[in-house]
Length: 294
Image (cartoon, rainbow, N blue to C red; front, side, top):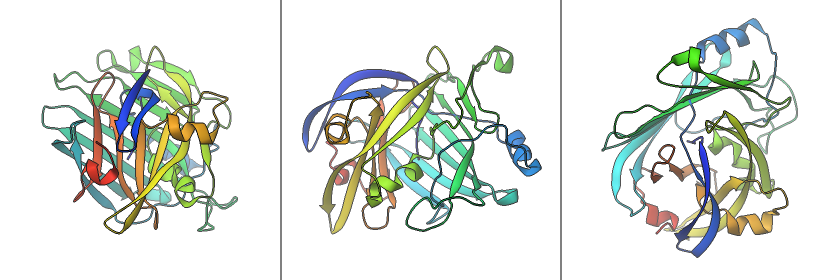
């Protein structure tokens, strides 16, 4: 349920709440190679580690959603699937496709945290990120770089479709990194529940890179639709001195929407790929207007 942007640019977006200027991210979602990483985890080796702890996966193993263009027309479908692997690992796969042929495939492998402080109100130690991957395909059939983020080895790679591993570009992740490109629906849960007012994390971008981008997420507007209270989470580039009060008004371009009562994912807005159009993914049965998106 998430995406990894590859190119940043400033823009503006209009929502039902009004016209708001916002740092805007354009980009392609991430991709990965998880079999080697899974073997590394089984062997008990840990060269590096993310400082991020995510809440456990709850709810159905599969979710279907509709993909809408910026004008509110349905243009494709998407799905989210959770698969149980060996040694307690979980794989979350997000598939997005539009009728003109554009598509994105993102995956993340998560491992249980055996001990440590609770990640939220549930009181469990939660999940840690092992590996993230994603790759976008344009409508003309061109596949963009495959982004592989190996949180165990502490390295991110941008692998071109032509040239493969031999032409890959790499970057070492910092110690105790905070990179989250894919499982943002889990990352944002403390904002949904009110446990925190702002959340800072990092993305890896395949733009002249890979490059590390500092990010901030804040709670946006709440509203009630047909008896359901919906909370919007907005995120974008971390401008350093930006405080949560200001950020909540300046980051409407990239958003997730959740059920305020149980934290269930409802939808999110993202770019289909680098330099591609914005799309809105909405849980089956709803439309962007139900989220306050015009």
